[in-house]
Amino acid sequence: MAARPQKVWKLNYWSTVLKTNPSIQLLDNPAEVKISTSPTSFIGVGEGYVSISGGQPSKILMQAMPEQIIYGGMLNKMPFFMQMLPSTIATPVPQTKFRPPFAEIIPLFSQLAQLATISL
Image 1 (cartoon, helix red, strand yellow):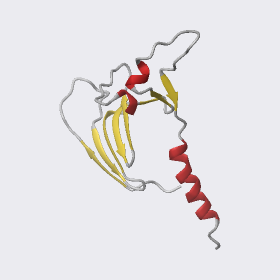
Image 2 (cartoon, rainbow, N blue to C red; image 1 turned 90 degrees about the vertical axis):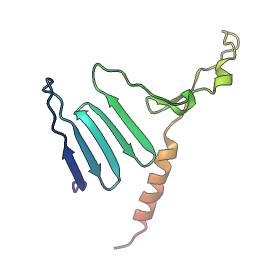
Image 3 (cartoon, rainbow, N blue to C red; image 1 turned 120 degrees about the vertical axis):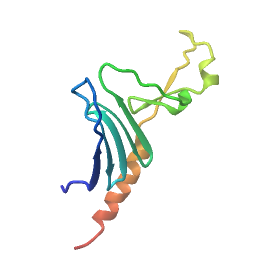
């Protein structure tokens, strides 16, 4: 597999922390921008997603509605009005909903099917 075309800018600044290695990367095929301060702490932005890693130990601060955040790639919080419903043993009300990544996988399968029909 060929390497993705990329352009990297290393940021030079004085720091007392030797583990930092700040850089800005522009990647192609698929297009992505990655801003990092260390190998484990970065922000990656591509078409249809934003990936954030705070490194260890760290906190990640987000400004988004709870329904727009996906936990572990498969769980969403229920809408606010559903979270207000009381949950009991007799009438359980889930606080999260399962969201498998089918929306992201189906376009990939259609592209693979198109490749399979190409005759050489």
